[in-house]
Length: 266
Length: 266
Image (cartoon, rainbow over all chains, first blue to last red; front, side):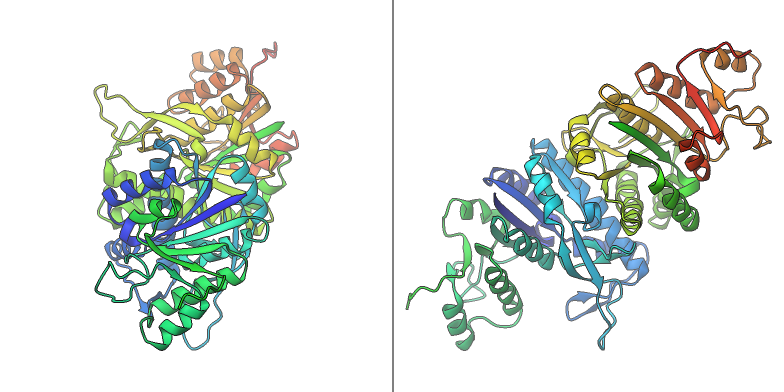
């Protein structure tokens, strides 16, 4: 099968109109699809209403029992079910899932090394057999950022990592493309200029761009993650804005494509 | 297929130890199973923490937008995913679903007749084809009390009605038994005596018991519901305590069985 895995974040989820626009374009995206979402901003807002204050270390949420309950409610309940209902209205047979559902993603609680992140999961295994069964039944899985340890414990898990883990696991038997939607138009030469998109990056270009300090800080883990996915068999990885995703499907330049193969471009 | 549909309520869900005990027994229940749950008490408690006060008319929750968000978070998120994780720990491949997931239950917003219940759903259609696909994939659906209208709107729906609708729809092609777990040991001759269980009720006995005022008030809609399910092809309906459900599976008297066939018992 040809499978597209698309990850969206808070910059789409938090704005009902943007979400509706995105979902309408998303349904036209060809072939089998899996949608992955987080929803950290909404979780922080609801947590605060309940008196559960977000605690972040290096951009990662410390997840105590109360925070876990909040993210489970917001990711797996509120956000996931509203996305599914909206997709159903667009005649797409979406099915919302956390990692515990059908045991699709098993994690382990992150070991304490200096920082105790609490109930945070590091992904161990993806149940590709079930995902195949669902895709063959013409279902579109909408996967949120909650996983489990197969011992009864839910775990808060990074949505980018979920998208990567799904992609690399499914790539063993399928042709998989991975799309990360975020708040920039792609990898930019000039951070302040949304038109300065670098259309394609391979490992050689990546090394060059890091050396020249064009790519730095927050972009590095994203790209390392992308290259790791490619090394594990994913076809190509795309990074860009959700509203440009449909152009990517048509092969138009609309973000940054990260490719395994090395071309001699320079 | 032989399918058992089991509905549990707040008196099991609200107590972690009772829920664990129930789930351990439930997994031993033979054959294909679907678990249906509500969770009204927990929803009320969370809603209150968020400043959303429950408003009830004749035991039914008035569901405005904020209340809908709360029940979606609590039923489809917190309760559903914790039950699924606990079942996975018991090596049962549970999959949590609301009615929007895979479009398994489509409802319409209840028309306003005197009382405006808000975002409350009356069930219209069950997607039995998908449920078959899941059961054949050895999955155990855990269905919560949120449905959708297939136009993008989630709807708060009575969990007893969800269990009945699943049972009557699946009964068209399968042999279905329906189990309602509640806070009494069954239909009782003396409400205050948990040992006064009426082991079997058919329509003749039901008429007699209503005439004698042994069955009245809250029990009547439950039994009407049960007889309607039988008329629509459900094999038998059982009403009793969650902790006695495993005895019902062994054919022991442990609650009240409601039967279609009329015997001359008296």
